[in-house]
Length: 168
Image 1 (cartoon, one colour):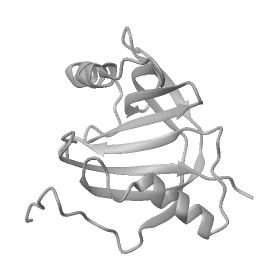
Image 2 (image 1 turned 90 degrees about the vertical axis):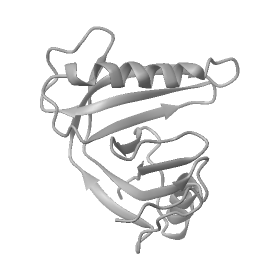
Image 3 (image 1 turned 180 degrees about the horizontal axis):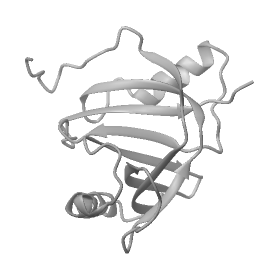
Image 4 (image 1 turned 180 degrees about the vertical axis):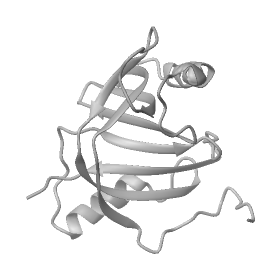
């Protein structure tokens, strides 16, 4: 397989797919950051802590990928670095375990320059609007990353973005 340059990107045949994810248990480190006065360096520090302690997480389902669920309000956001697990027991000090309920998502795959262009969140918003779908605001947005396709800030990122949608 040939590597792509930082200026190339992969576009799926279907840019957005709608799929249902079953309930998922995750364990990892949370980060809370204020939009106005927040210390955004905490994000990289928390990711490094997660990577350093990854092998300590018990009951991992898939050690090839990690999840970054998040939610926000007008003042702040909470972001997590997590592994999917079979059970929520023996959670390590400083980590948090929780269950993401079954939900339907509009999903976009992105492999390209960082900062992201085109923005996968913009792609999801356009898809929802074009298809009469509504973002499920009380559910977490999920980002899924592969460990072998590491994000290189200011260069390249590969991820899947799962935007929760309301079901009629």
